[in-house]
Structures are given as structure tokens and as C-alpha cells.
Picture 1: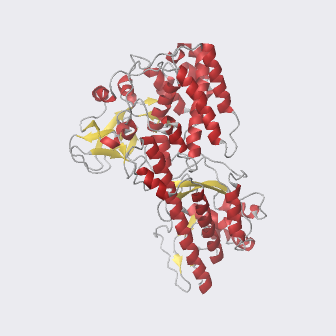
Picture 2: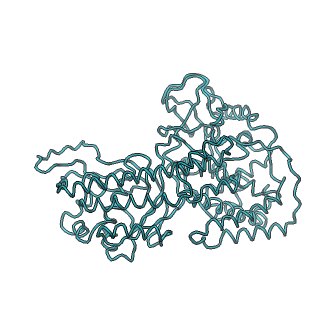
Length: 600
């Protein structure tokens, strides 16, 4: 969107056009496809694999130099045509214009005062580039025969975009010409910029993004050159890696879900003009009006004339913003760091712990998140850690008896500990885990802050360091929280404080999200001896909404860092707890309001 638009304008025809034989190119493509399709690199070898894939890609790019399509003129010169095209096709353009906002890039500027919740922008369906419009285009015959395209809407949109870009008579040409010619996502980073992310929780997603893109390109290059149905595509004669990277980046930074015309399902779409809006904190204010068949956006807040109009992209972490949108948001209230935890199947109490977790709707192995705000852990993660640290007697208490199901409902509520010993164990675990993760970084927070003060730091290097530092701040906060909670519960144990009681008849469910499967919690705390007053309108206690999602499936998966696992186990064992195995994985994820990135 606006922030993603800060690019260096390329000149048409710059550089000598490469001359390469089809046989030589197909040989390189086959080598790239084989490398990208091989088994996942073993732990610690991901960077080496990335360098090998990048080396092949650079060889291909060198041979394709000068072959990519580049529009004449600057991007800004095409904005008037975009506005005219939008107005001619039924979009609303009366109260804003496209403007340059310096460091934030291009965005929408109000041309009059706009009130909060005022409908100021709508885009009819016919202007959208969708999977359905791709099916009805020159790409349709290939789409109908290729299962990869049918399964991957984002890739379909990318090829649709390339085919329309090559068509001088394309209906969407005013929109396509207004798009950036380069992006700031890691696919465009120099090797030294990516290297700055080594040791971070986000690096695996960055390396996977590059590998997936290279694999997709090799697959479709071969398909376009060999599939009979692809012979009429404009990509047949010119389909460079830079072309595909641009198309994938355009879709990745702009794709959104909209309902199909009959409203029966959702589909992916690019929404012209609306995708110029920059992000700020707030609420989602964009929806789809099926009756009028158009995308509509109301104002997030009051805007005065000449002020920039913002929208809220969703509750995304800065890792997601950097990797999928190409910017770092400094005041991100929803920032978080992924942490994968699992109960080892080799543990003696595995079956009991897995059963308690299953009753609470939590997998025995899952990618959770540590949050930048308080508390740093969700109700779901709190429940998992409590079960993770339970003794055999505590597990039996939550599994046996006629009221066992009601006991499960308290696991995600911070007001009702399992025991003081259990709380001490789980917060010690969190404290130890955060400390060990901080040791994996190659620099300290102070060193990162010093690097960010350098005036000659490139944009991509700056974003990488900002992301690295943001992760450390979250882990430092989790460490401090773990220490404070541990000391608090140790004091309670030493003083012989009584555990809080709860009212079993007053139960509600924690709000469900992708990350927090429905996890019951108790509504009200009841002190010992207090007369119970049932209040059906009581708000949820500790019912913080978490919108962190992942499609990771990792039951029984081995730990990627045995040293970290051993140290954590030792910390717990020293307290008399049974040995626990903790797992860490960095699987790609997307938020609920943004489609997950598929891979081929």
C-alpha cells in the first residue's frame, strides 16, 4: 500500500539484453526446481541452503537482464489515469487524492473534511482483479488444467497480473501501471540485509519465502514453456524471475479476501485505489456490500482536509508487516514473537497431559506467541504451561471425578492457579526460555540501538535491525514478567497463602480465534467464605482476545535446539519437577484478516 510504494524507478531498456539459449535456461530452471524441491534443510543448514538457492537465482537473473517489462515514466505520472479510470468505472473519488507522504510513501489525502465512520470510498467488483477474473481471462484454459493454480489463489493472481501487464489493451492497465516497480519485502533484500536477521524468530519465514518463490517460478517457467495450453500466454516469450518476484510481491502486499458474487464463499482479490491506504492502529473499517456488489470503506476517524487517510490492516505482528507488507510499524500494539512448545511423547505423563489439553481444546504441540503487551502470554498459553508443568497428582485432579470438566474451565484464568508450586514452575520455565532465546541473538539490544543511529543505514538493513530489536524487547519483557511472577508465587507459597476458590456454576468460554481455540474460563473470582452472587452479565476475566494464527502441525516433532531444551529441562528438574521436553519451530503464519501464503 502506500508504505510499500517507496521504490527506485527503473528506466525502460536499461542494461544490455541478455542472449541465452532456451536449452541453457531450461537446464538452470531444472536445477533450481530440484534444489527447491529437495527435503527441508536440517537444523542449522537453512542459511547454507538459502545461499545455494540465491546463487542459482542470481545466475538466472543475470542471463535475463534487460528482458523484463518496465513501464515508461515514474509511478506518480500514472496516478491521474488511475483516478480517471476509477471514476469512469463507478468508484468514489470525490473526497481524496493520491499524494506522497515522504517516509510513509504514497497514500490517500483528504480533499475535504471527512467524519469518522463516513463512507468515503467504494470500489465496484468489475474493477477488482480476482481469481474469478483470472479464470475468465487468457489464463483460464491453463487454470482449468493445472491443480497448483486451482489450489493457490495467490499464485493465480500473480500470473493474472503478469498476463494483463503484457496486454496493451488490458482493462486493468491504469491500475497495473500505478503499482510499484519494486518492493521492500525481503524478496528484494540484499544478502547482507537478510544476514542481519540470522538468529531471529522471523528468519525462517524469510528464508522460506525466498525458497517458495524460487520454487514457484521454476515450476511455472517450465510449465509455460512445455504445456500446450500455455502457448498463447504472453509469458511464453518473456517470463523472468524479476517479473514473477514483482507479481508475487504485488499480490502478497495487497491481496484481500472478498465474497464471491453469490456470497457462498470467499475469493482473493486486488482492490485498486483502496490499496493505496497506509496502516495505523484502530479497527477494520472495510467490508463488502453484496447488495451493491462493491468493496466499501468508512473513515477510521475524523480527517481534516489535506490529512492522510489511514486504514487498519489487522492485528499483525511486525514480522508479518516486514515479511508480507514491506514496512516496520513502530507503534504496533499487536506485536508478538512466535514460540513453539510441545509435550514430548517420550515423557512418562504424556498421555495424561495430552488428555487434559485435549479437553481444554489445546494441541499437545503448538506454535504460541509471546506478546508485547501485558500479560505477555495468552489464556491459551497459560493453560498449556500449567498442564505442561503438572505433577501426576495434579493431572489426576483435572481428569477424575464428576466435576473434572469444570476444573478444566479454570486453566486459562490467571485468577485460579493449579497450585503455588505449579505457578512457580511455569513462570520459571517462561523466564528460562526467554533468557535462552535472547542468548541466540548475535547482538545485544544496545548494539542494535547504536546501529539504528547510523545515518547511512539502508532502508532494508534498518527494517531488519528494527525487527530484530523488537523481538528482543518482547523476550526481555517476557523474562521480566516471568521473574516477577515467580517471586510473587514463591512468596505466596512461603507465607502459606490459600489458593483462590471458584464458583463452578458460573462458567463462560474464552473468545475463540485462530490461535486461541475455545478455552473455557471462570467469570468471577470467589474468595473463601464469601457469599456467592451469580451475575449473568459479568464480563470475562482474563478474556484477552488473541488474533495470532498458524497452520503449524507439530505433534511429536523433534526440538530444533537440543541445548535450549536441555537447559529448560534442567531448570525444571532442579525444582523437583518431572523432565519436560520443549520444542521450538518457526513456521510461516498469517493473521486472520490476511490469507495464508500458500506454497508449491
